[in-house]
Image 1 (cartoon, rainbow, N blue to C red):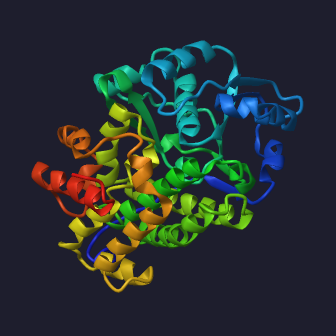
Image 2: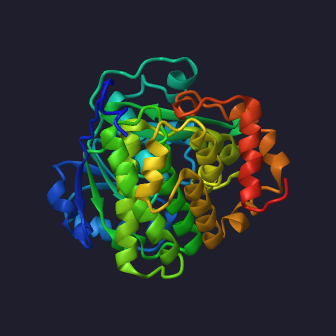
Length: 387
């Protein structure tokens, strides 16, 4: 397809320095500047000894540990932590963990540089502008293969009491560097491996059928999708396979690079109220609709979906739909989904909240509420969940 390459303007920018390979974590110190370090991570990493290990790698460098990050970081918790950290002389930040840890660290990099006059709530609820400051340098160390947050300029923030999702977005939120060590993913349990892998697949596919796509994002997305489709089912039954872990980390990275230029689209828009209401893991909530959305978009295909389908080994977009549905069957997506919802009614009541500006409108084909309801029903039907 040439429509994206001729007759249209596009741009792509990603400043994150990437250092990848087994054992690169051991080289952490050589990538850091002088000054006090804030380590942002989760309680689990402290319990498993990773916080202590990182402190050892930093030798004599002074370190402040914030290891209270939980899934879906909230505005109130982030602002509370930022107030507590303010004034401690922090000069740089390390994020160790999945998307929640990295997103939290991005927020702290901005808030600690901006000082107490900046309010997240004020920015989101009153549209107060982001101050013109340079955030603290961030080193992102992902421990899952899914979010791609290490190479995106976005941070997802939640107001769970109001069932709202916000996105802090600025080119200044890019990490300074990312260390990609597949060894850090070897201890992930099966379900977390699957749902984070599905997040990477969702990023890739949403970038492919995105109105903001361009030749660079399409190239990243297509390669990411090819790796994920081949690797994820094998990894789900061979969790200690370092080669497969390395491939999924590559897929996640490439998909993250894709959405750093295109953003996400309808599947993510659908997912936000589901996660806010039912606590469904993000990667699951944003992926179970992929086959139905692909089927929906194929009706207005400008050539990109046929091209992608053939590049991935399918004869047509319809065959591509069947291929993703078969992948979901292999991965047990139906069983995972039914841990959080009872049926279609749980999802359909959220349809009015599923039109997230800046996400739903990126989808290749526009849609109405009635069409969105049909997509939800079709998604469950493909999973053989009663509607």
